[in-house]
Image 1 (cartoon, rainbow, N blue to C red):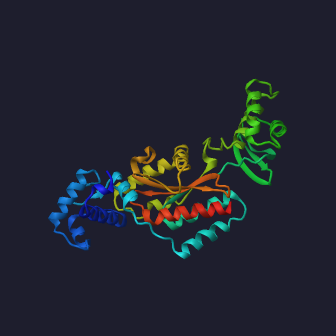
Image 2 (cartoon, rainbow, N blue to C red):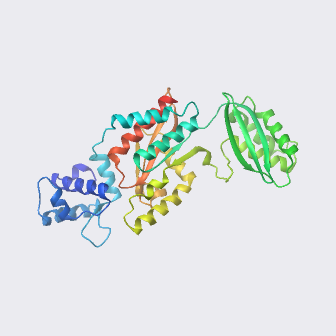
Length: 350
């Protein structure tokens, strides 16, 4: 359905239902609407229009009460055809710029500060995909910590340092860790992952590497960590995704059903691979992209919306995606420009 398919009365009542629902989170009844409309209509006339809107799939009744709330289809129609975008205040723009600039020259610190700031301003959870570090490696070292655990220290050209915990086989000696480090340094230093990947994988696969099985497993883990494919909890995407402000999602819950929805959302947020896949869909967007409720399978049960925007470098190369996640009654008019401006600030800094 297009917004043009609705007559003026239906548009006015539909807009009021959506605006009121976004503001209160409560079903909207005909009596409430009659009080809010500039040109009051009788409750009976409003109920007739609401019945037509419900038949069109734009609103529904979550309970047996007379109140209605917009469906995901209705929210999409509203966002695409009726939303009046708000403007960020001067203080909000200043806050975004200052908070991001405080991060110095560390990209991960910049993105962490940006997501923390964005979650605070939006009162939702925020998330960002960090760009992959594809600089040539300067040095890699394994540091023994305890039985079954070691630290991988990676220094890229430009002196960016990353530390990652990995699991190592029990019984592995410090000498074997040194051998694993020497093996990788000989093949990685001065090269990017893309340049070294094929040769190392082929050598390990064909058993050409003169390594015992324990040392070989450490080499494979160290190589995977540098490639951004392995972390201590064996989640292959954790290194690329930053999430902040989940506690904001617990605010303003009105009923037990809200708690159940948030619990489902928290479980969805733990599925970081699916989250990254979702955000990757926003990479090709020309500006902000919006995913509402069941439009994305990941959040179909938690009734949540994602507002995301790619951020780019000075050559318009897309480096990553930053966004906000919250209930479907999220304040789209305010948060869309908030996400858009934050993405632009990050791009300018990078």
